Picture 1 (tube, rainbow, N blue to C red):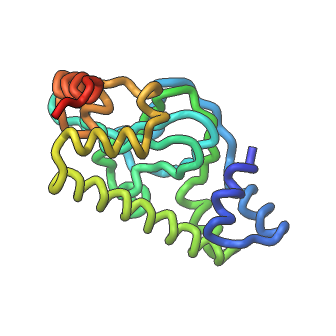
Picture 2: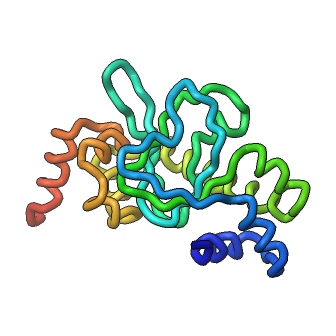
Amino acid sequence: MFSAFHQIVEQFVKLEAQEKRILEQAFTFKRVPKKYKLTSKGEVANELFFINKGLVRLYYTKGEDEITGFIFKENLFASSYDSFLRRVPSLQTLETLEACELLVITYQKLEELYVALPKINVLTRKVAEQRFINGQQILSSFLLESPEERYRRFEVQHRDLLQRVPQNMIASFLGITPVSLSRIRKRMQQPWSP
C-alpha cells in the first residue's frame, strides 16, 4: 500500500525506517468509486491525497460548464491546494474519474507531522514547487501556444490519459471545444504533404 508512496517521497527526502513508520501512521487508506467527490466547490478542503491507483480531476464550475483545471494520476499528490492551505472554501471540485485507491492525510495530521517529522517540511515544499511549475507551464501554454500545439504537448506528456479520460474533459483542459479537438486529431492523422 505504501511502496509507490515511499518511492516518490525518497526522490525528495531520505527517511529512516522509524521515520517511514511515523509518516505511514499519519495517513489512512481509502478506496472510492468513480465519480466520487473528494472536495466540492464551496467546502474547505481538509484532505490531501496520494493516488495509488486511479485518476482524479480538478475542475471549476462556470454556469453549467465544468472546466478541467488538472488531471491527477497515479503517484501524484492531489488536493484543492488553495483551499487546503489557506483554509478557505474551495473554488474547485476534486472528483474521481476512475475507482481510486488513495492515501489520505488531513490538514490537522499534516500539521502534527511537521512537528513530529521535520523532514516533511522539505517534502511538502518540493510537492508545492512541482505544483507551481505545472501551473506555470499550463499558463505559458495558454499564452504562447496554439490549441494544436497544446494538444501535441498533452499527447507527448500524457499519452496514457488519452484512453482513460473522456475527450470533452481533455478539450476543456486544453481550453478548446470537443469539436475543435476532433478536428485537430483528424488533421494530425492525415499524411503530411508538401
